[in-house]
Length: 289
Image (cartoon, rainbow, N blue to C red; front, side):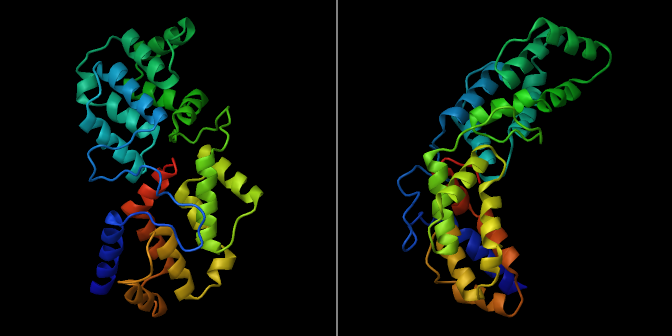
């Protein structure tokens, strides 16, 4: 048990500080793109996510954004798997927003601005203020807005997962960076280049949040082909690809534990993709893990 904890600690701690390095024979690297770390005080915000946070601060809290607060929320997106719905709940159910004492009409208008990026139409305003007057709670109204396709569409434009399980009515085309990520991940996992169709399909799924980076990596690393690899070959690819470092240091200890059944491949994969390096790598390609 002590050895398992040691391996877990080493895996999680070491990758927090190592740089993203190209794997041997890889043709794609995240090196030339800005990465975000919890320890950095000047994170790089993408345009869509920055717009989302600015809207929340101005419309929900009625004030300018503060760098520290926005940084913490951004870290929740990058590292903790927060969705747009999680973040909106955090703002709209906060004491700061509640203490604004909005009227029902003001409250509904705020929701339209945040969820749909537009003013409330007369029919919508009448509907939701009527629901509030009839006893529906404000939290229930918030959940009603979260459950709409229009919110899903808006989140796609921001580049964040909506968190409602509702299909989008729009489609986002894959980007060069999402294609690069799929190429990089596939090459690191299978040691050969992916065909154009595989790259396009994976990149499209990532951009439309049909799959996360971690889910795509799991699909590759637990495919029939990789399941048939020896432990040493499988673990070497995990180190070079997911952990972005050569198989040294704690590698032999980890391999011994795999061989004797003390730790499973699933556990190693989980620890690797929960480490900060994986999040920074995904962010470097313009994607959330």
